[in-house]
Length: 148
Image 1 (cartoon, rainbow, N blue to C red):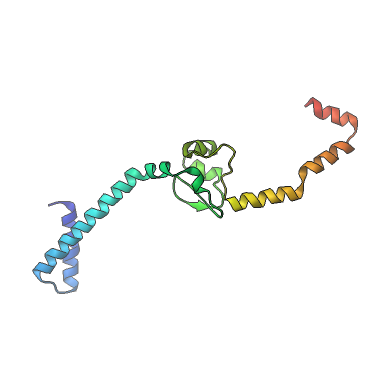
Image 2 (tube, rainbow, N blue to C red; image 1 turned 60 degrees about the vertical axis):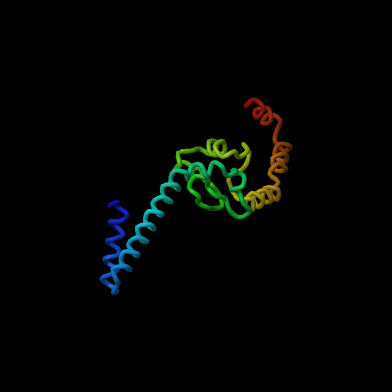
C-alpha cells in the first residue's frame, strides 16, 4: 500500500468518526482522497522542477509594468528591484539583466517611477546649474578641475 493510500485511510477514518458512513462510502472517500493527495504531490513536483524553466521562458521586459515590476526569480512584485533583493538570490543587477534578457541600460523599476524621476530631473535642470557654476568660477579653479 502506498503512502498516499495510508494517509487517505487516516483521513477517511477521522471523517468516519465525525459522521456515519457506509463501507462503500468509506472506501470511495478514501480512494478519492488518495487520488487527490497523489495529484497534489505530482503537481508540486512539476512546479518545483519546472519553476526555473517557466521564468526563463518569460521575456524579461514583460515583467516591467506601468505600476509594478515582478522579480523573475521569486515572483515578488514591487516598484523597484533593489540590489539587496537581488543579492538574496545571489545575483547582481547586471547578472539579473543578462539572465532574463533585459537591455543593459534599463532601470529595474516600474515605468511610472522611471517617468516620475525623469520629470523631476528635468524640472531640476542640474546641467544648467553646473554650467552657471563654471562660468562664475575663477580661471585658476577651472584649470584645477581640468587637471583632475
